[in-house]
Amino acid sequence: MAEQSIYDFEALSITGQPAALSTQRGKVILVVNTASACGFTPQFAGLEKLWLDYRDKGLVVVGFPSNEFGGQDPGSNDEIASFCQLNYGVSFPMMAKVKVNGAEAHPLWQWLKKEKPGVLGTEGIKWNFTKFLVGRDGQVLKRYAPNDAPDTLRKDIEQALAT
Image 1 (cartoon, rainbow, N blue to C red):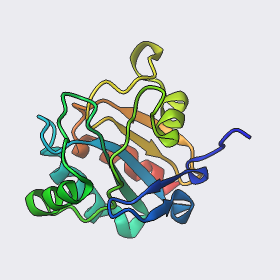
Image 2: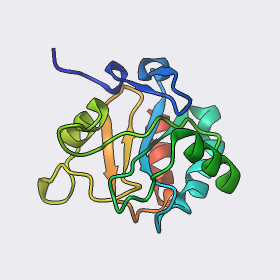
Image 3: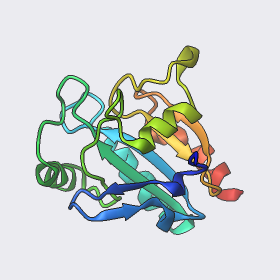
Image 4: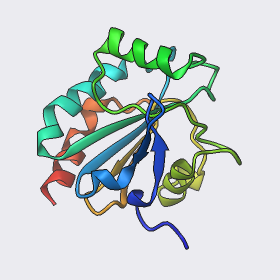
C-alpha cells in the first residue's frame, strides 16, 4: 500500500521514543533536515520563532538532524538535543538523526522528496535546512531551499493555517 499522507509515517524522537506523525493530524507541519555545525545552523532561531508564533494556531515544526552534508552533525542524539536547546532555545520537536538521501533514507524523507521534487525535478536533498511545508490534510504543499530563511515562509504558513 502506498503511503497517502504524512500521517502514515513514524520516526524516533531525539530521546529515542516512537513518534507517530498521525498524532499531528489536522496541523500544519514544517519538516526540516537540520545540522548543528552548518552555515545555516542559525536558522534554528528562526524556526523556533515560527514555532512560538504559530503553534497555538496549529503549526508544528519538526527537525530531523542529518550528518550527510559535510559531516555537520556528527554528535549523538543527546549531544544534538543539548546543542539545539542550549544555543537556540529549541523547544519544537526534534527527531533522532536520519539519512535523507539514498537507499537508507528514512521513509518519510523518501516520500517528501517524491511529493515535491526540487529544482529541475531532482528529488535529492542538496543540503541541510531543506524544508517541506505540509498542509492540515497531510499533503506536501511546498519545498524550500536551505537558503530560504524561516521568516520568508510566514505567508505560506499563514495561508496553510487558514485552510
